[in-house]
Image (tube, rainbow over all chains, first blue to last red; front, side):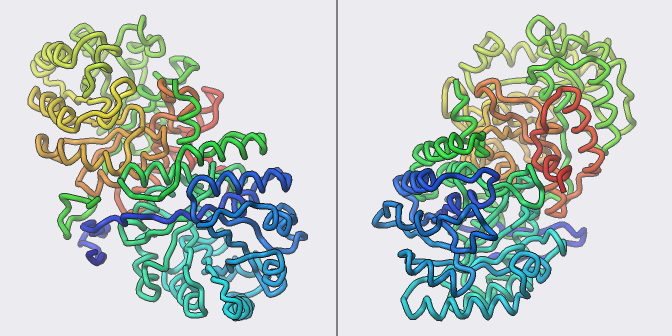
Amino acid sequence: MLATSMRRNHCGSMWIITEHEYPKFVKIVEVGPRDGLQNEKEIVPTGVKIQLIDMLSATGLSVVEATSFVSSKWVPQMADHTQVLQGIQRAPLTQYPVLTPNMQGFQDAVAAGATEVAVFGSASETFSRQNINCSIDESMLRFQEVINAAKERQIPVRGYVSCALGCPHEGRIEPSKVAEVAKRLYEMGCYEISLGDTIGVGTPGSMFKMLQMVKKDVPIDALAVHCHDTYGQALPNILTALQMGVSVVDSAVAGLGGCPYAPGSTGNVSTEDVLYMLHGMGIQTNVDLNKVIEAGDFICNALGRRTNSKVGQAKSGTL
Amino acid sequence: MRAAGIKASQALPETVKIVEVGPRDGLQNEKVVVPTEAKINLINMLSESGLTVIEATSFVSPKWVPQMGDQVEVMKGIKKKPGVSYPVLTPNLRGFQAAVKAGASEVAIFGAASELFSKKNINCSVEESLQRFDEVMKAAKEAAVPVRGYVSCVVGCPYEGKVAPEKVAHVAKRLYSMGCYEISLGDTIGVGTPGSMTEMLEAVSREVPVSALAVHCHDTYGQALANILVALQMGISVVDSSVAGLGGCPYAQGASGNVATEDVVYMLHGLGIKTGVDLLKLMDAGSFICRALNRKTNSKVAQAACKL
């Protein structure tokens, strides 16, 4: 694969080198049951969550983020984390990571049968303080504890970096800061770092610049993108990431999960729309799009809402 | 899949011209018919946003397209801003003559890359439609009126399914040779992806200079911005879009159609590409027409911006 590089021409517009190979295979990390449902207004019964995850397992998805071991005081939607994790029918080739913000959460997750966990860092100090009540440095210390404990049990840990392309409080985030946090999580022992455009403000321009910086410090095949579609930019941003060698994409069935910073706006990109694009490009995912659409229909019925997926909307309206 | 045909040093265009099709393609495909004054007001607001091309109306028989029944009043009522072009659709010679009489100084004709679509849509074969357009082209040349050519179904047809890139290239080349100064390639049902888009553009750009090509992407399957991005990477610098994403898809009830101008402009500006468009003024025009239509905007940027 050829390297990409960037420089500005004399008029200031961007050069993007596009002679590249797209990945032959992209791994989809399905975050609907966790990130999606966590950010929906309606709280869904445990049985429905379990059924959703089971339907998603049957689509061929190899990673389905099942729940979050956060205090139910903060995230009531995830209060049934133990029942969910114990209730799902695990597909043999599928991983079911769960969020574990601290040692307490980690221990509860392990007791409930978790075999993969995730920790959530931020590239923005203000976001870190507002969201998890501590600085980035303090959060890293907490995560180190979790990662050490996970290592002892040979439990893989995925690292998330939020606000990778912008922060609701700080605005612009320097790519070097994203790289710094990503590098720390990677060196601490996370096997994969998911770079999140938390408020969906990124464009192919800022995605390019950010990845250019981060891949200097973290190998490209350990990077994932977690794009929000709040400004409609998720698919071109994902396309840009693919052109730069990223081959892991986070998405949520039916585009579950609005944006808490722009109420009424969308959040997560829809898995269906991502799959449609990837398959149209000849990129393999091993995921059955029609089965994902069915899972999306199921959860939208349960939530009493319309799907956020354009593919879902088009398929249901096709004459 | 390799992103073929791109040299390592090729830049994205510095400037992209947006062709705003909301008042015509958008409103033509909305269920609610909007009063003439609202159309005029919309076009005037769009004129103030920095757009340089605003497709104003369509000189099709109101029997077929009642939403465009007030074509003459609209054309005569708008405040034409210097430096802005207001093309109108003219499917035949009669429409062309009526358009010129009403003050049009640029027109557009619509071909299809799919035989079935041509038959179902305008009741004749692709070849017959091109012959019809010959009359319009001749009259336009005499009147020194520039003509823009549209090719629909460039990456898929609601009746035929997959459309051969060579067929698209053939129709595009015909329109270009007939005298159209620009050819807009339309993904009519929004089924295209960066895969099919690249394949189609490679075929077409072998026959028509890239500088004379535009893309008209529908967002029915959410692929429009990704498709526009690959088109830019292949040297295309003209993009059609519709304020507020007006205009649903007549082939998939309730699904979206045109890509929203606000979302396109947001992406282009984020890439450092100049458009001359003031996004805030554009969003104002979008809010206005959505109120007039009593509907929510299809633009994600507009949805997000008014909530923050």
